[in-house]
Image 1 (cartoon, rainbow, N blue to C red):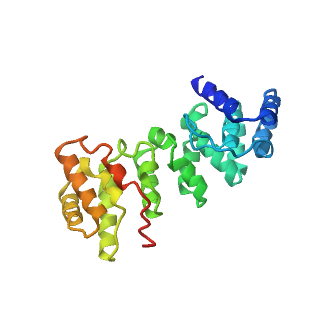
Image 2: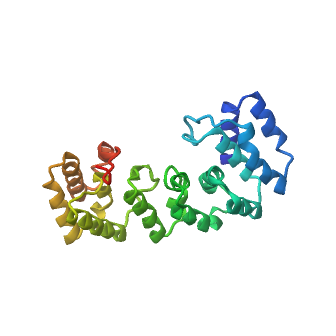
Image 3: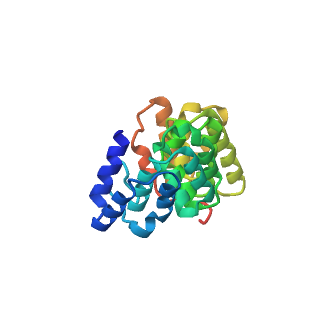
Length: 250
């Protein structure tokens, strides 16, 4: 109920008169007709950016599509997933946490992680609570690692720190060893995922990082050590490393 109110208030704040009229005209629709309205929405609704509130970073047409999805049954939503073009897939993926019985769409969410379409992957990875709430550890790790491998900013992943785990930390260590052996590096902020899971291998990694000639790496090593000694003391400090760091094009 709260989500429906937030959707309605957001639409009311950003939609113009003609957009509001079209939205009102869709209220009587059901089933396939309502699903068709989802497809047609961008013809009548602008891509105006939403600023502030729970839907910050969305566009108006995505919010309107979400509003339509909350009135559809799972069969019609599944059909939309199966026939979606890219922007439809983005809207569907962003909507996942707000649908009835979100857990039933787990396969759709993990498919988005495997998607070769960047905007669809970004829709599940960034600013989306669904992975944090419903992904298994293996699926979560796949999401985070794909971000790292593709030079995407992991700090935009909701639940990044709270869902850190030993297996992910070990994999990051292996990844770092491969990169270092090739004379290359890893994004400095990935080391925020290891302080709770230190072992001999990771300890050696952090000592190596501390000797780096790159200030960002030295800062990362310092933050890891501080967090190990005093858990919670580095809260907010990792923001200093939350900057684009294109390690594959450097």
